Image (cartoon, rainbow, N blue to C red):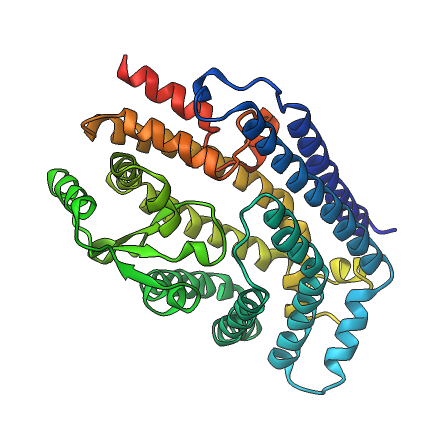
Amino acid sequence: MTSWLAFILFIILFSFLLETVASILNLQALSPHLPFEFTGIYNINEYAHSQEYTKSTTSLSLVENGFVTLLTLLFLLLGGFNSIDIWARSFAFGEIVTGLIYIGALLLLSFILSLPFSLYSTFVIEERFGFNKTTPATYFLDILKSTFLLLIIGIPVLSFILWLFINSGSAAWLYCWVGIAIFGLILQFLAPVLILPLFNKFSPLSEGSLLNMILSYTKKEDFRIKGIYTMDGSKRSSKINAFFTGLGRFKKIVFYDTLLEKLEKGEVIGVLAHEMGHFKKKHILKMMLGSIIQTGTMLYLFSLFQGSSTISAAFQMDHISIYSSIVFFGFIYSPVSLILSLYFNNLSRKHEFEADSYAAKTLDNPQHLISGLKKLSQANLTNLTPHPLYVFIHYSHPPVLERIKELANLEN
């Protein structure tokens, strides 16, 4: 066993153990006692129902994680990566097309492995807990649409990356970084117009008191917005949410239709105020810059490892290539990716507190945000008592109880 193979096996097993331990601790942290802050929001049966949802989703995640880890180890140790490469090379295309076939085949295998778990999650667990509104036709149509987007966007981008690393020498990572950054910014403008409407219907918020309240609040805060829309989230799930999309003067606020059904008008304004806080505090810009820096770091590190014969040998490859180096680098980079994700999740949680603070200071009644958060948690069966380790690894938002307590402190 080579040192690289030992390192890669350690990474795979460590990731599996870390996720398993965090998930088990998260299950153990479930408390049968309803937090005081949610008295009157949940009854005992509803609270028990929300905890069953956490247990069901976590159990499925544990099974999927174990299954995928086992098959990944077998695929690696039995030379699966090399077998796929030999098959891709049998078509006798050039390096770029062969790379597209190779990576496409691995993505297809990954999709096939994950499909049963996705189906079970959607049509068994989400159905059992009253969330699922997705029909089989919608589910598979979503897959076809996603595949279409992957083909028309992913193939040109991946071809561009392969071409640069094949032809541009030591500066390839820099050219690639600039190209991906520019493309990412363009996509921010195109997604709301061309991509999101493929999956959901967006309608301007109808005239009425809610629209007037929103316009009054945005005017008071000198916040320009291109449009206010509702989205047919109920087409797939009864969960509720809201989000901003677009950049600059093209930004739009989108409310799930389920949110408008379940929240009072003042609570909707509270959710809007929180989302506005992210823009006012420049969180969106900071996270975008962080993502661009992270991409540059990843590409530079890849340039140091690309074409390594020792790494290729760890995967039992007969041939060394740029495209296979991209796949193998994903394994080696995962510890760096974990560390960066921990940092950005922590930063995101701080941003959520800041956005809550902005909302509380600008709303006529900060209690509207608190009651809105409570209803969001109830409607989505949120885990009210997650374990700190699970929060540290996975949560981009603080646990809802922490947010409520912090908002209560701001009022005092």
